[in-house]
Amino acid sequence: MVPCLHPTTAGHQLDFAQYLTLARQSGFTMADCNVVEVKRWVDKEGMAGVQRRFHAAGVAWAGFGLPLNLLAEEAAFEAALAQLPSYCEIAAGLGVTRTVTWLPPSVDVDPAPLLLRVAQRTRRICDLLVSYPIRLGLEFVGPHHLRHQRYPFIHTLGDLLLLIDLVDRPNAGVLLDSYHWYTAETTAAELERLSVRKVVEVHINDTALPPNQAHDQDRLVPGEGRIDLPNFLRWLHAAGYQGPLALEILRKSPPVEPAEVVAGRAFEALSRLIGEVAAGGA
Image (cartoon, rainbow, N blue to C red; front, top):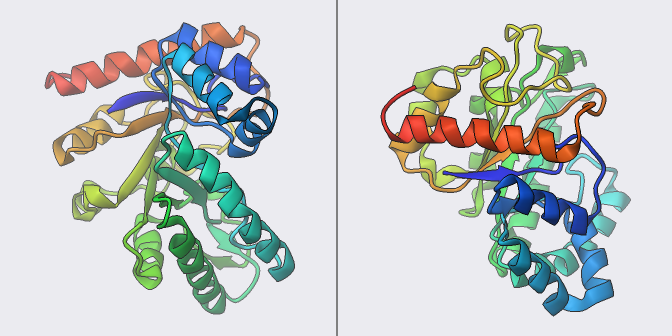
């Protein structure tokens, strides 16, 4: 398991060059990057120039957020899908093998036809991604305050695995987030039934609040809250997960501390936790 910088980690708006500098200064060797931002730099500096930036920082590009909305109106979805190959070519050329997106925990429309439409769209995306090859990680969203719409949708691991079964593509898998694992009150038995081969990427974060009160935009650095992250990481370690642990720390407002202080503290906390779990402690 490898600590991975996420654009939300530092809580400050940074351009691509500043972001890679932050990763290097904070100790990260992997980083999730915004593919739209990277494409702008490729258009400006070329693939070789952007590759040199990654190499100089000693950072590998771990993955990117899928630049389209699975629930968008038809015309918007088709337009975004048509643009996706241009992003995938850049990402694949820079060594990326994963992209991720999330699904809402509740909706205001009939969820049955929506589920089928989302599955059909996801199947088309996976069929496009497979030639690069890039895997797609889908994320269920757990916080209770986001379940306010008329019908429940994808807010548990079981919900998500049902969708993945409907998609029926080998490059479709799970983006597993400790915050959603906690707020959905996912059991150890449910995790045990999840094959690590289905885990595309892992997001990690913390909260000081109980599951039914934790707000999606009020996350903490691992170890600063009450989520049982050692148990979460023990399962990943025992299952053989060796991919990135991306520090997705969403906040309602930017932290007062400088970006390098926040990111450095986050890296140290996560590295310590990984080390303790690997050594059999925590």
